[in-house]
Image (cartoon, rainbow, N blue to C red):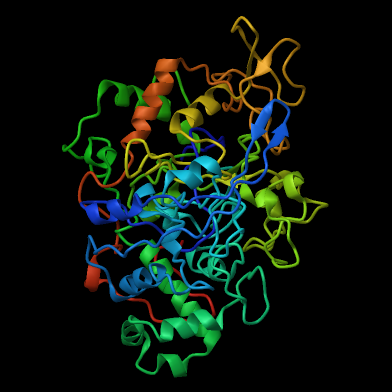
Amino acid sequence: MRRHRIIACVLVTVACALAGGTLLLTNNAKALKAAAAPPPAPVQAPSQSRGNLKVTPLVFFPPLPPVPQPPNIIALSPTEQLGKDIIYDNTLSNPPGYACFQCHAPATGGTSGLESGVNLGAGPQPGVVPGRSGNRRPQTYTYAAFSPTGPYYDAEFALAWVGGNFWDGRVPDLSTQARQPFVNPDEMNNTPTNGIYPPPAGGYSALVVQKVQNSAYAPLFQQIYGADAFTKYTVPDLYTLITEAIAQYEQSGELCQFSSKYDASQYGVPAGTLYTLSASEERGRQLYFGIGTTNAHCAECHSSSAFPPVLAMTNGKDTFSMYCFANIGVPKNFNNPFYQETDCTSNPHGCNPQGTNYIDTGLAGNPNPAPNGTVFNNPNTNTQFLGLFQTPTARNVDLRPSPTFVKAYFHNGWAKSLQTVVHFYNKRNIAVNAQGQEVVFNLTTGAPTGYTPLFAPPEVLTNVNNVQGLQSNTPGQAQVGNLGLSASQEADLVNFLKILSDGYTAPNPVGPVGVGAAADDPAPDTTNKKLRSRHRR
């Protein structure tokens, strides 16, 4: 089997923080309309200067508007339906008003809020408490169900750390991911009942459990887990059942549709006949997968087409991610509202006492050990993990409610267009002089005198892929930063990425995902305190 060297390539569509996934908009005009709600008006903080860059952080966004729960587009099993009801419930935050989908917007592929104002002005989303914000852009939960349990070091195929959930891989799977947003003070703000924050696995909120017990969908909860579920199980066990139901919906065929133009073409699995790629899209596909003389190397990280641990879960369908960790050298986003969140008196667990000196170290900041016991945030041993972030799926990277809607990209929301993302991968190591002449430079030493880099320096220089800026086709070398693509080739890549958005056909999920009421709902495993998803390896 073919080995892969992990090299980040084209794009990071993303997601962090709130639990919940995304309803992709197959024949769902109501959800599209809801997702295009007008933006809240931000209160601007004073302007700052960073060299020749003037930034105006947009700090105090009011809470985002609610997202109406759209109708089902496939038949859901009872547990999947329960999970959907929970993540659309905006009473589960403290104060009430926030549901999971308010940061994982349906019309944007489950990421980056509901409107362009937050994305363009910041990137990370505001929490339910005004003045608070997460430190990263919401990572997309479309196809996150297929990220292997991790992180673990894959020495056979990826030759990199792989799997888990969140940008920093701090939880092994979706059910443990869903535990955190409820009690995150910068998101849904429920105080952990047992005082554990951040919760590795044992943190829970009795208030969330109480609200679910009093909800309109409580009878469905009892139908699944027993009429006496709310008295038979302990509060921690009930919290586990709630988060497992969320995980079940996130792996459903509503969120993992495989319904894009790409899936409908001859390149889908199984091959389709409903869509034929344009000449530009076909050129972009060949660049993406390295077919021909020019290789953009995207598929070396943003594809599961030769990664058995994922293919085994998808029956051969490509998730367009290997879920590996890499440092592609993304610049710091000085418009991140988290830099202004310095009040540790009112927000001791969610503040940023370092202000603009804060550095997001990615996997090296992961407070929880890997399933094999590896400690990532040990300052004496974590150099190899600095700046590594998980590669999300490239599916739905261009999904948006309107052509003019602005999405934010990368883990910190620094890039504001797909074109910028592709250009960054192509020319991260390029500087220009006053005459427009280009030169390749080493990020460690900086651009030569008289030349200005096209992009700001990486936030974390350690472990940056291809820090030297070696030519794209140099054998045996990393390929990020100097791909040597022309402007038209960049456009071809963007056009190919645009056909990865779900909603072109009806959902075409894999395995038992999305088969509806015929699917067997898992029995609760409360003795383990950790309910495993059906599709975990």
